Length: 539
Image 1: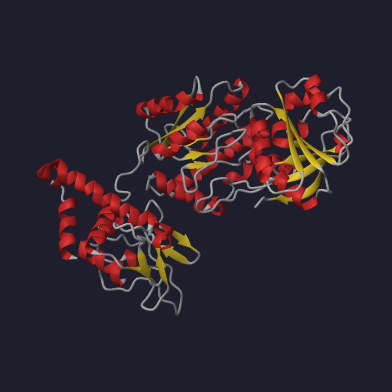
Image 2: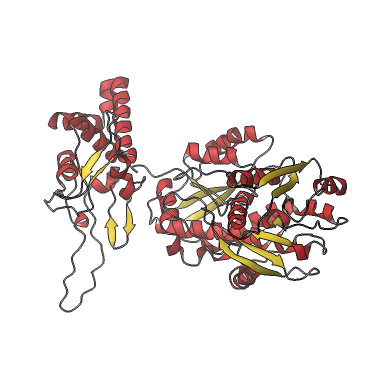
């Protein structure tokens, strides 16, 4: 092993690249990439799975289950797991003097305070770190805790893993330091001017309140990245804007059903993209950099499939009425996928335009043994005004697309129609908005009728502010991602202004809201809703 560690020391030397030239630099890149695969994927240089054992006679783990990332996280900053503290394994934390807590620990009669051993140990070097990884002993000879695996690594793999750890989270991410932090919000083309103004007013007021300009501490700056043109040009536009002004994260934003180019940009550049306001959210990669409050109408489709499987009376045919293109068409396709294998016939009836004539044709030949699903936006529902409701087994509409309580459904349809309701139950949401959102809006003189848009934007900003404060000066994008996904319950009141009933995430999860209610109108002439089915979470 000493020969490999000697090679590692040479690769880590300050003047290596200059003295040995491009070939050595290339070699070091290859070694670090080999170490990354061990750390993140549990894959050895040979391609075989990494193997490790916990304790002398403990459980054996291999492959992805043995990878360091499982406990120490992609950033290397570790985490709290119940009562266990997983220490940081970043380059600066391993290879410099440990930093004991500056404050005097609390004392109690008959009790002795014992500091975490990793806070009092001497710094690692290549040999002592190799010993810790293979034998479970710290530089001072202290046994590492049982949960720390003992790895079986050959010389080359050990050298590669140590080389990777030396550079892990070595340089903070661009766009932020202790004095200033830069963020951007992305606005897709053709957005309603009033909605755009509402988003920016909330974000700017949140920044002024939490990080006022000219005050002591870190100043926050918001760049507005307005996109133009076709979606296939958005990634290039975003790349140009990032070169002009590096940012630490993308915050909130505004779009419709098309957001994939923004997500691809965020994943490619490894920039956290936090909770934009969308009609439909893309399929986010597990463990990626993009977070969303909800998947929108796509989630509604899966909730509806679960509801029909659980509670609907027997029916012969499910008919979906929607426009040929747009979010309704994509929701209809999602419902069809979710109901694969069911005995009922699923019939799609897309229309080119939402006219009374087109709707009448779409409603033809329906009977009591059919279920009708309307994937129509608020303006499209108005085309039903002169049509009587068909005599069906059940009629359901999308709440998110149709406008929730304000859905312009004809009075004759309301008694026969159920709604998929993807936000918090009306009375509970009303109470929370009255307590958490409206006083804040009045304080900052922000007008607006779309409380879902305003509240979600404020929640996104509050979550970012709380998460950045918890980084405690370790400004790494990966660490920000881990803070948001691992500690949502520790964010206190930060997400309280959001429209959804709860904010829940976990390792690898990227959508905080995972279900919906089923509701119906209490009477034909009002907007009050009553609960038909409690919160439904599809499998």
